[in-house]
Length: 455
Image (cartoon, rainbow, N blue to C red; front, top):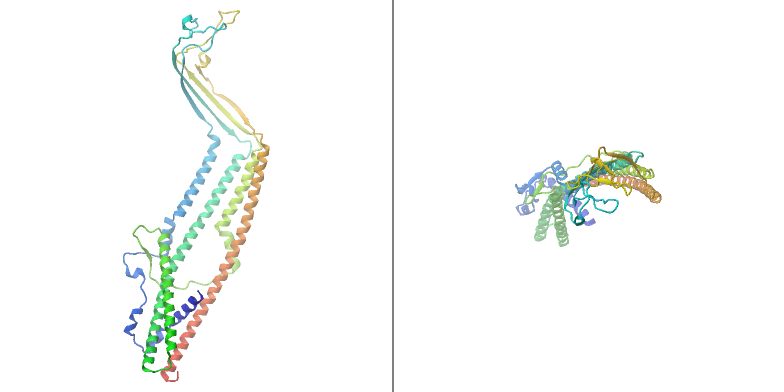
């Protein structure tokens, strides 16, 4: 890798000397035409779809399967919240039963004889001979919770903060897509710039090799066979660098196809533009650290997570308070074969007959004139279980707070490393520019000395 960097710099310097060669009056040799820089695919294939950087980012965000999956997960969380809020009000039900029963009264008289529905005694041969008919029953019941604790409010708060934590992470996924698109985009531009630079350097090497071969053949100049071998070795190194640059270009193009989700048979390419330096002015390190602490999605999500766990503790504590519910119920029953029921007196008064109103006649025919209402208290006596749930929620909260501290320190360290890398790159660029100027001056002096016969 070190050799690649060194030879890359040398090649850039050689390529930068091309204007000096032209100014010295050298004409282009037709034998060097084969070393023309390779053209980008976008310049040779008109069927490629050319996209700008902004278009690549927009399309990648729009078509990203990962981002769509996270969006669906967010929808799932929101629906889970609605489900949890509706659950206390979902304890209403209607139950219906259709069955068949004998068309005789279900109870016998005091002396054990079966009683017909009209109150008359059954003949002996009819004790076990009866017909069956349908019986219809309907029941409605339900209950509404009466808030006596902060269980519902704390549960809603925990769910809200959980959703906000997920929403806070959505920009992070988009930023990751933007970062990857930038890497692929500038990877393509950088590799093509490298291929062009290598091509220019190869042309200079070809001219130098031809001149050395000519001098050796005519026994002119001070060059030796060793110089020619060194030059050929350097040309071989350029071949290796060129293959690496082509591999980088291919990998970056494939990455771009994946990121923008290119369709079957579609080839996405970028504009054939030169690489330019970006504005290298940067702020103080402290400013970037504060921006990261205030705006990083990861920290925002952790802050909402801490609030969610605090609400969960309140929710678990509310289980120590009993639940109170207002209940209501209504029942109807109708059996055509059993019209009414008569209570046939006692042994002392076997002729006593008591007519029961229709609404309460028997278990086959009944109806609620008014709904039955009441208050129901539910208080599970599992205090030990509740205590452990509270302790677990507190432990989860402390773990989340530790995660927040760790993440903040990690982000600060990340900002410091990136800042140091940018500063180092600025210095490298400045040094390379200075080396380029010095190389041009040296080459100009060398050409001038050679022209005057003193070089």
